[in-house]
Image (cartoon, rainbow, N blue to C red; front, side, top):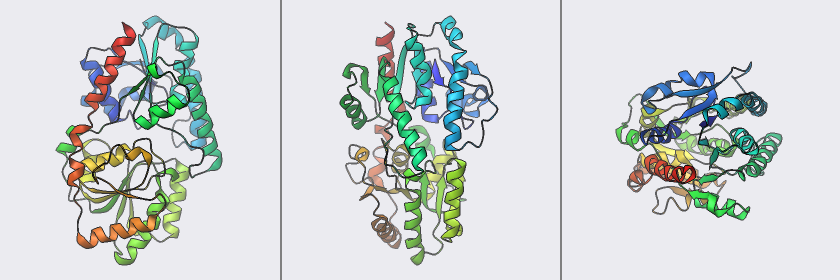
Length: 380
């Protein structure tokens, strides 16, 4: 059973779907523990899954336009609703419950099942660390950190934990987790779609950012960079692909207006599939000034698409980019980033041949196979 209790209307992330499809191709029967609306999600009905069994959760009164605080309470309510489904879980006798992320809202219910001493095995993906010192609203940041600490306590009941990087593995080991439960898997990109993607002439993007509109992603540093670049290139276009909570988006757009950058910033919204990679390949450079990452899939996707990428120096990148696939800068040094981008545009040098070479190294099929091997050992 795949635990997707709090997955929103944007649907299941495609990387997860690629793994789930691999599970099915290897003979595993999947049931999705999720909200009613995911059953009809276009992503579910697409080519990714050919078997769509659901343990459905009923609709809650408020499921749209959630702030960060709203989402916290929404998640708790969803888990309370989920408790009513314990009997169904017992009746179906699932072998494994799978948490595709280790956030608190996807670990509460599996933890409950383990407390009840059911025979079901709990497998979780540990994909992120939540620091207390990241930028943003202090209350929200504290709550996020607190819930992360709680999720770490719950994860100790998991039978197997997949980690996406060596840094995360070391983090868990330093916290006293059983090394025999931790499996290093890695992360990946959508290889087939990246190979199919082509630049789309309707997009004229100078710099592209892909990710959550969130302070930790360096969204205000991007505006600092843009202000410097605009002095030489007044019509420079920064495109933002992604969404944030309503308050963060509103404040960000107000800041853009305050800096008189409205004509230089274009919001593309949330994009997936081939369209997403067509847009990436239509961009001259990729700007990713995140302050904290456990891996940074969006950055790897852009690099594999063959466009020049600019990022801050983070520990997570050091085992991935060893041959200048990314131009790296000291954290918060947006002036050096701006200077390098100006040099790039002056020379019209946008290619990233070293990045393209990484494409076949990061495959979701390979990661799914590692996870499947662990499943087999758990259910013998």
